[in-house]
Length: 59
Image (tube, rainbow, N blue to C red):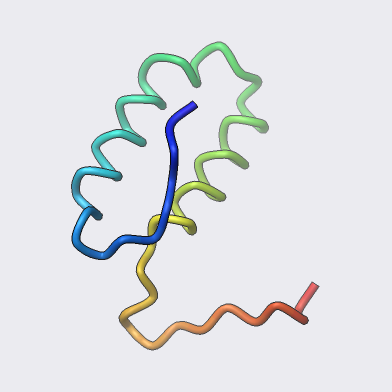
């Protein structure tokens, strides 16, 4: 699996990699698993420069 990290300067590259992964490898996964992974990876890529804050104590 690809490495996912928060790097605002690489958002386009990381999103392209995510969509490529979704089009190839992820198709073998169950749709719920694939959706959960896509969400988790997307949130990991998102740079949070728009004021959104992730609270560690929310869950």
